[in-house]
Image (cartoon, rainbow, N blue to C red; front, side, top):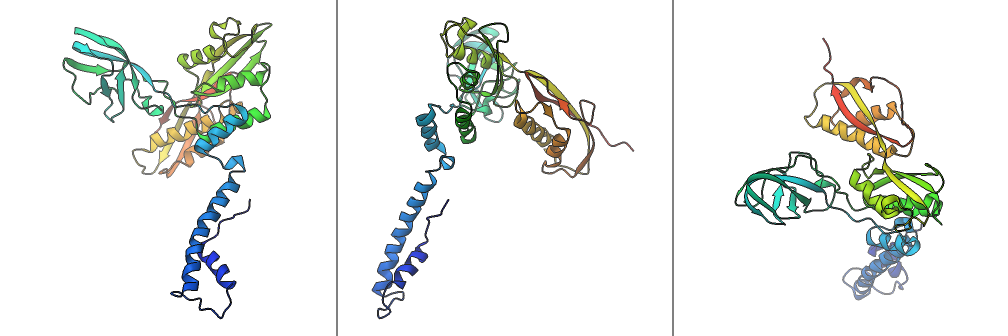
Length: 357
C-alpha cells in the first residue's frame, strides 16, 4: 500500500521550489519561515491521511478499532480476561471477611469471595485473583502470605493450583476468528456454527466438532484451552452451558432445538523428554527449554496430527543461553509422535541426564 507520509523538510523544499527566486528563501527570511510553519502542519495532515488509508485494510487494525470492526461486520465479540479461582485453606480463629487479601511471595494477590468463620480450626474458602489474566494461575502451595495482617489468621495455603485465569483475547486470535467466520461460514447449526460457539467462550483455544457421534441429532464438541492443553472441568462446563445446558436439546443455549450437544475436553497425550546439556548454562535454562517446547506444542494443538521430533529439537536449540545438547529422546524414541484424534500433545517432564565419563 502507498505511503502518504511526508516529512516537514520534504514539504518545505517543494513549496520553496514553487517560489520565484527573486524572493529571499533562506532561514530567517519571511518566505522561508512562514512556509516552514506550514510544512510542519502539513506533515501532521499527511500522517493522518496515511493512517486513514492504512485502516482501509482491516489487517492493519488493532485494539479497539479491530474490536469494533469484527463486531460490526460479523458480530464477533473480543473475549475479555477472566480471573483465576482457587480454594484457600486457612488456619486460625475469628471472622475472615469476603474481600480479605492473601498473596504469593511474588505479590500475586487473591481476595476471598465469601466470608469464613474460624474457631481455632482449619477450613477452606473460595477466592479469586485480584487481577484478571493468566498470571493468577499459580501453583499449589504458593498462596502463603497476607499483604495486610488479618487478626487471628495463623496460616494460609492453597492445596490445589489456581485455575481459570485467561488473558484478554489477542488481536491475532480475534483476527483469526474473524477470518474463520469468512472462510467457514456458520449457519443453521452446521459444524462451523458449533465451532464458533465454542470459541466464543473465554479460555477456549481450539475446538473440533463431531456430528452424529452418538446417533441422530447428537453433536460432540471437543475443546482445548488457550494454552493448547485439555480444557478444565470448569471450562468444559462453561462451553456446555453456552451451547446446550444439561445436554437437553431444548434450544436453551446456542444450539437449535432437537440438537443434543456434548462438550468434552481433549485427551492429553503426554510427552516426556530426556536429553543431556553440554557446557555451562544459566540456572534459568531448564525452565526456558520447557517454555520453548510448550510454545511449539501450543502452536500445533488441534492443527496437526503429529508432533515433530525435529521441531522439538529446534525449539530446544533456539532457547537462549543453550550452548549445545545431545541424546534427545521423546517418549524414549527419536521419531515423530502421532497424536490420536480428539487428543492434544502436552509436555510431561524433561529429564536432564549427566554426560557419562
